[in-house]
Amino acid sequence: MQGQDGERDRHGARNGGDASPGAPVGAPDGTSAGTAAGSPDRAPAGTSAEGPATTPAGVPAGTPAEAPDAEPRRGRPRSAAAERAILDAVIALLEAGEPLAGLSIERIARTAGVGKATIYRRWSDKEELFVDVVRDMEPDDPPVSGTEGLADLRVMLESLRTRGLAQRSSALLHNIFAQMKSHPKLWNEYHGTVIAPRRLALLEAVRRAVAAGELRDDLDVELIDDLFVGPMLVRTVHRPDAPLPDDLADRIITALLQGLAPAGRV
Image (cartoon, rainbow, N blue to C red; front, top):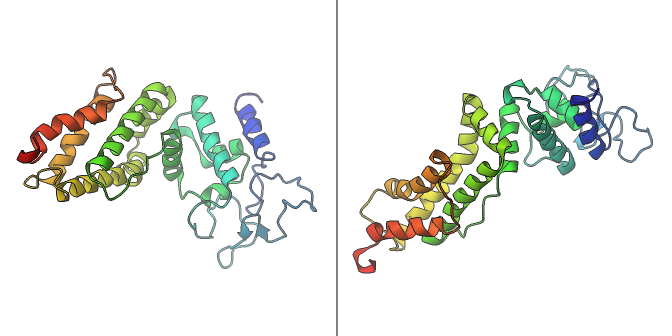
């Protein structure tokens, strides 16, 4: 079949072959059932390519791939190639017009050329996976000093601007955000793991700026934070036709400092 199968072949070829939908849980990432027994890529019986297989007590080794691994998820994925194939598979399916709600773990695994268990070792559910897909498509969060106040705040405001530009230039990213907001579980996952940490980092930068005497200390820091972030969010989210010039973060900070800086620095 073309279309869906063509996507699967494309991604599978990138990762060493498409795994059969019926492949056992212990199959190595990116390998098919036909891998030669003597291949160095094939794990010994009873193990996976990423480590010894573990199963719940009383569950036979041939447990279907539909069940998440009993093995606890530990930190970052153990195969960068497998993770890349999975993220690319979701993006390819979305580009082909598949809605987020219609994507299943089975379909994603088939397109990526991996087993379902490979996905469940990395993400507990679709929502967690989709959030990583969005983060992968967005510009990376820039590094900040963690010790500066206004300097770090400027870096993070600029990051908001560049993410706004990314959404404007990517119809797919814009469409994903629109779909996310109609799925509460997915939006809550994105808000809790992406938006909330970014907001906290901005708030901490405002606190450092207040402590350093760069901003007034007689105002609520959350209000100050909202005053800085608000104009950028209006431009990037609520006014998609508004310009986002390179110096927008500086202009926002300069304008607000005229009302927020201590009297001696006005």
